Length: 363
Image (cartoon, rainbow, N blue to C red; front, side, top):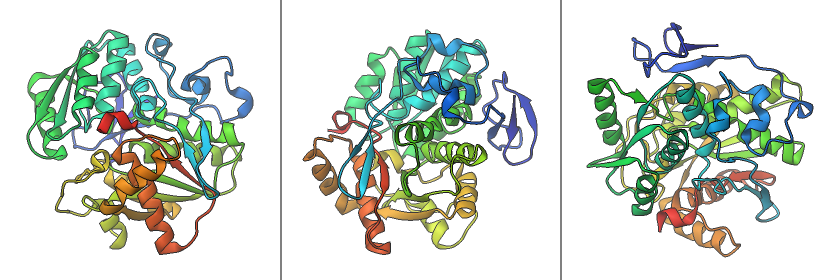
């Protein structure tokens, strides 16, 4: 198992502390696990590590890091929509799937201190698992981040530094600290172990339903769930458990849509956009670092991108709450995006929406 640069193909030992290749390209993971099979699931393990035979694990460090993440239920919202309740996680967001893998890797290679930038949810998650692992942690968040998310980060014992400006500026400040002080950058976008965790979203769906719905809607900011979903579906294809990809629907904020613009122009790279404030703060990423990777997979598998209209997000949140599902604004953008997709392409039954973050985080 090695890191491979997405851009130049350079290989590096996974014990490297370098966040990316010397050429600037991000690492992917050269890992070929056992073919996915329902018979190889450890049904006595109540976390995502029931799928560990199919995941890139160096040792058993995960046993000291896991908080019981995963195994979230799928519930029906209406005749056309299923909801995967991924806000029912230890840190109240789907990011726990990836964070537990990143921190397990850090523990495996002896990292003592980490830094990370986040719009909130990933920071909460990394801080929680770092606390469990006994690893010192500092999280950088942009101004405007929900006060409750900041409170959660600090409650786990992490330093939370609020950076003026946009989400992208926050990332720049954090990366400069990594460079200046030689710290380990436990970033959910950069670190390929994160996607080894988010791909379990698909494994769970298949185990729960014994099939994959015809349509999978995925919110896309930095693409951490999107890339994991692609990896999970490719594993099912490779195992012969599905014959073709479902229709994947990528949702971006109307106020921050570099991938929608790229899709509209058939561009291989994200487009430069004027980032505006959005209720969907978790996907308001103007410069997605894995944008080329996301778009390459999108064109390969016929992904369609749509906006979540800004003026529909609160209505969507209200409608979900009235059915007992209380989620944050970014998550409500998924339903708003689904409705926009139906407006563009017609009635879309058998669609699975991820409920990615709990509502108490963004009040």
